[in-house]
Image 1 (cartoon, one colour):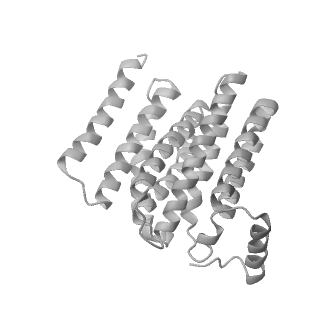
Image 2: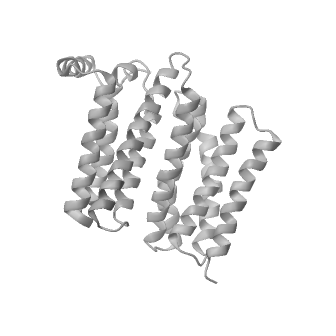
Image 3: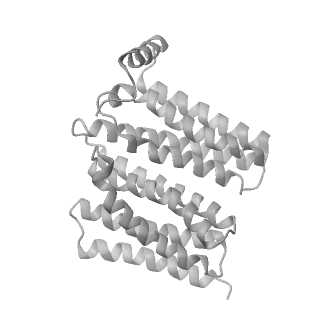
Length: 275
């Protein structure tokens, strides 16, 4: 599907700007990652907690830079799903930044981790975009990288949501706000459907399962970190089994593999819970 929200003149202006910059796609991605990583470090280190407003701006800028970098590929085959994880990845790091110790070394390490992950995510989304047009050998690797960064983002966001210590309705609302789109993205990278509605039933059903677990965990007498770890394990199990279904490899061994992951995280939750 083409950019219906951009007229011919707007497309022409964007193409002209990109040609004048005279940098290829990879250079655009590297430049974007460097600018965003530096912005994250500056906003969090110098602005402190007031930098939370910059976090949301940074998340939108992540999508904007990705749009410019992949413009040629997205111009004729636009996928709105490609922007979901980059947005929440930046949001997750920005919000989690506020929970870590305010030390220079810690900030540098977090910014470096953010930059490395963001570059890997950009490359993965580039592969997904290209794969929608032609078959590409790196698709399986891109899915693995995306799943890893999805789990990291989900853990950070869940940790922030439970650290707020709000009532159960607000907590579940916050969890739904990022769980549904991230689930939609996780399903899309295996189906690569253009229409958002194509994966809607799957995404709603899986999100409902995860929200049921989050509701029970709200009553659990444990720390936000442990609860977030377990809910991330639930997310991994639910999404992993669904992705195995899409790949037509939902065998007994695969089911047991995800079962043991869920069991292990539950044991950790039980062991470290203060009763």
